[in-house]
Length: 369
Image 1 (cartoon, rainbow, N blue to C red):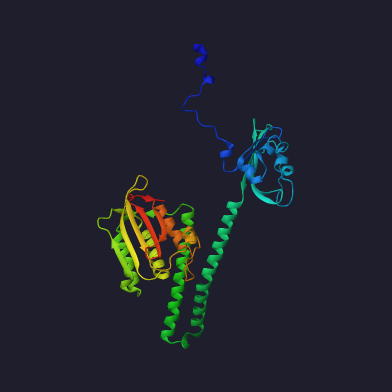
Image 2: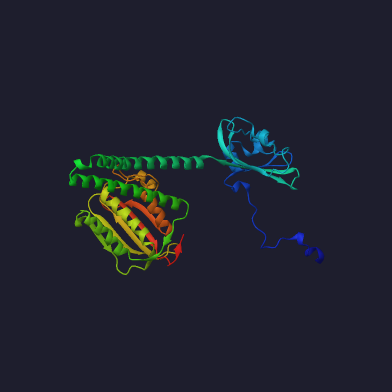
């Protein structure tokens, strides 16, 4: 090789610019590419899975035969869009629901690659996505709406009934009767307020907008404060056992969110568990993947959580029993712990009841969003 040829830029690629070539089969969505004649030149594994057509049967065939798509009104999509003979200024097609043979629904979008702004189409790139994830989302939204409607109906019916009765027959009731009805209205209003707060938390968690206002948190003090609240509500002192290790690491966290986590776990243990509720607070053992932090374990002596339900405990609407609750609390608890950078697990306690354990890293005095 001559010295002149050795320095030609077309002969070598600088190592910094070189990289692995993307394999279309590595893409999670279906990819179909047709050339300027409308012949399929790329048909990846995801496209084969979505359409049920083997890759070897798609390559080299006309794209409209490989993807005989119809819209929801039964019209042929290729005839409507006409990528090769349609408007020269068109750059593609937005994602929409179309049907494959047999009525299988698929999300389809297309891009027209032209060598000039109004030149002929040189490449037709079609993206395919299954509708399973979207349908799961739609079912989740529908279930959320149904649950909210159900949870709101009962307290609002009670509030409406008592206020209407008091307004119409105020003079007929004694002061004790009025107080009882107003206390019921107040309790139901609190129930609605809690539900709205839970829905807002879910919205922020799902959209990644849950904000943390970090401050120094004394976990042992927070635990004792929650136990005192249960004692004030009538629970016997012998119901609770605390084991708090000395010399806990300094913890920076959102105190309101920590209270929300502790409150939910203790309330569940008291309401759904039996016997003694044990709360243990200890320093988390740091590992290469998990920094220093604080671990809190809440255990009860109730019937525990069935093994088949363990994987669903932190999902929306999971309920351990029929005794109240929206089934949203543990989903929110998990979201709060994870936005702190922590972890939470569920298992069986030594006494056979439920055991929840969460760990929060030491953290830094920053405001995260």
